[in-house]
Length: 116
Image (cartoon, rainbow, N blue to C red):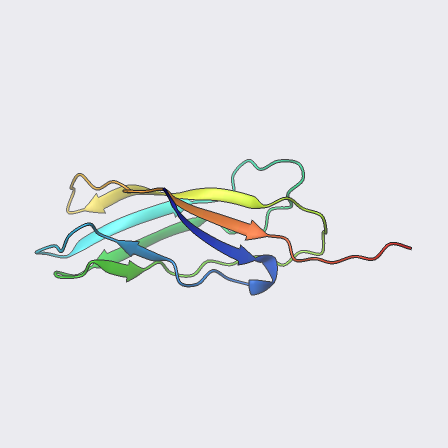
């Protein structure tokens, strides 16, 4: 399975995304995580900001929060969901660090409209 975090455009920013380790560690570990909307279907107006953050695990930590990223609340209705994944691009000290299960971000459209 994957970890899925869902936010509406009206939220304004992400919150509550945690990056976890499968075991405790003996020394500090910096992990750089990226992701972003990239190419989306034509039925999506991009709302999510690119993610490019470094999280720091101290010795003994098994979970740390990912810094929040912005979400633009546009006024376009009838958009399909905007979906993308987060990826680990580097770690210091250099270790074999992988994303155990995919972390998926979904941004949903919350714009309403009237007919006639």
